[in-house]
Amino acid sequence: QRRVRARSSSGINAEYGPALMSPLALLSLFVILPACLSYTLKADYSGNTFFDNWMFYNYADPTHGYVYFVSADQAWAWGLVKVQNGQAFIYPDAGNIAGSGGRSSVRLQSWTAFNTGLFVIDLAHMPHGCGTWPAFWLCGTDWPYNGEIDILEGVNEMTNDYTTLHTSDGCTMQYEYSGSFTGYWNQGTAGNNASNCYIHAPNQYDNQGCSINDGYGTYGSPLNSNGGGVFATQWTSSGIKTWIWNHNQVPSDLKNNNPNPSSWGLPKANFDFGSSCSSSHFGPQNIIIDLTFCGDWAGATFTQDCPGKGSCEDFVKYNPQAFQDAYWQINYVKVFQ
Image 1: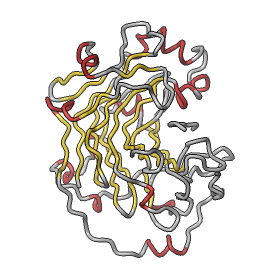
Image 2: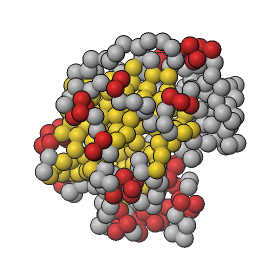
Image 3: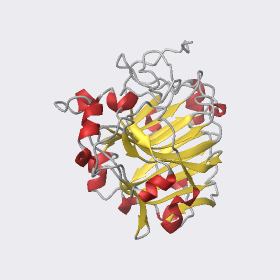
Image 4: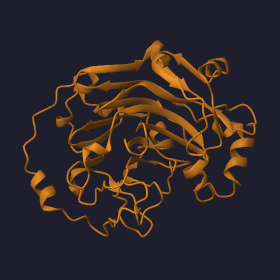
């Protein structure tokens, strides 16, 4: 559960044991919300034009991964991206011993930054395996002051997705009602709930954030064995929620581009804004899809997650065949506002 994206203790102690509800949080349960927000499709990344509106991030990995993020020209020339039968495929180099800069891979970042919305990814397959750290996430500029929303993320051979927020000081979800979502809190350094979103929160791993475990089958090999899935994250002035479905469970309103999240039931993860965390912790966000290797999280837990395989960097460098299944196969990414 150690996770560091990059870079005064908050003074807010993480909650131990069952979460207690503040009077404000209790009152919020009885607030009548509008029947539904009306959403319009604003961005559709799919089909033959999937790759047209992304920047290929060709810089050093801020999470210190053993990776070389390729340019757009390199990605196409080396066969690391393609569109086939309407699906976007994104691969790492799985045929060569890696160079000193790390294994070649792709990191996409949307040219457009979005300020609130409903963000949906429909996957047929995601990367997994020892040494890998894939993610589908949102991130603002001037990190962490405009926040980060991790929708789909994990490392190595994990089978459970972690949905996580990372912020500057002053954002905690320790009073979040546990009955408002179906996942469960990841644990901090002292067995406490990792419910403080501040990147340097006490009693949590550095940059662990407020992190909810979405349960078995929401990540990695079991997700792929089930044909992938659909992840939908709603970000409003009231909070952030994430739903995850198998393909045979996707709501018909979402299939028809007329999403009505108020009809979707409890989310896997829920983070309400309020007196404990203002919505101002989150500014405009770019969408990011990437696969890095080792680094601050996958590298830190590699020997525990993948015993007997030596060091993470050596494994990633000398075993290209291990990454033949570490690819993204995406039906679409859509943004509604």
